[in-house]
Length: 95
Image: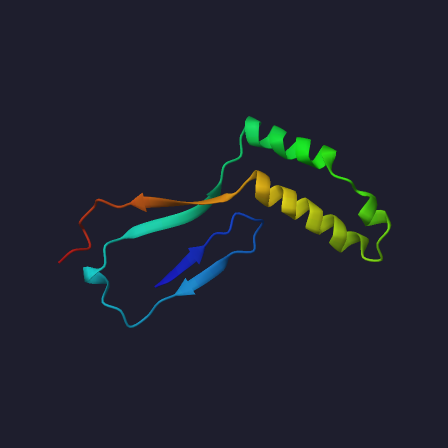
């Protein structure tokens, strides 16, 4: 069984491979990682970006990495990941 593990960023997802398991006795609970993005969290994100001091980027030899680190730190704090479980109440897989 191969399952995608979604991290909520771009197209860099992982895959989980499980084998040699009897799946008839395992309840199916699929989950995914989501980020809450709405008007409130977006304005919070933009507000944090506008208040950030960007001087360190221009005073650094690694401008791209500095910019990316600041951006991702603000992104992760504004849109924290949350695991959502989809409960499958369908008993088709039970023998």
